Amino acid sequence: MKKRQRVSMNQDDEKMMLKDRLTSDLYAKLRAKKSELEAEEKRKKEEEEARKREEMKRREKQKTFEELLNESNLDWRKFK
Image (cartoon, rainbow, N blue to C red; front, side, top):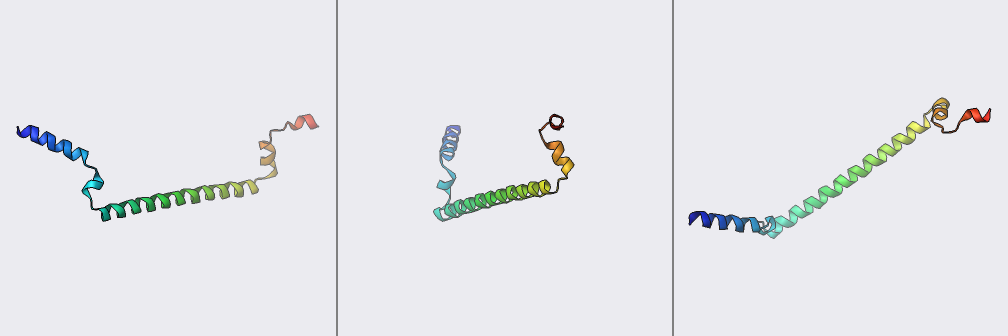
């Protein structure tokens, strides 16, 4: 019988959600913190992408004529 009671108590515990166990104030603070962290992560990701774009532009500006010529897909022998 004790095993059955424990099993039923565990099932009840599993059905309860975390928000059911927390006070509404604490739950609201956790949700706010979650959204704040997600926004911060999104901002960092956008900044990293912008930094990479700027780095690529800077590298492109500093390429020599030879590098640009080698990257060209034109066949220069046809124009001789």
